[in-house]
Length: 125
Image (cartoon, rainbow, N blue to C red; front, side, top):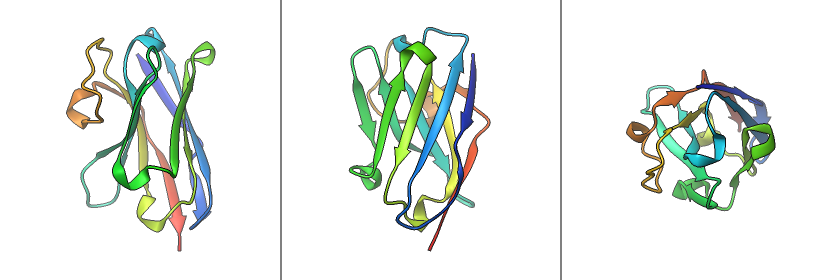
């Protein structure tokens, strides 16, 4: 299993970024896959997760209406469109998958086994 994130960068508050996570080594749409983030000095947290086989999604409350998770199964890629970015969204963003057909429907860090290397997103005020 390999997950490679891209698309991070520096934007002003209110701006947008789109993250991509290219997955390989497993059947993409059978399992939950999601985006997590870790800000300096804080614990890693789930941002948004999905299972493309049934379209199930989960969003952290603070990003609802601003972030959208989607996937392109033909490309084995999951995306996170982030709009109206705020300084508090600044973090290293990670892609992860549980490679387990049973999914709780949430974005619990402990439920996800395989992780990408992360990509830094900075939203300046």
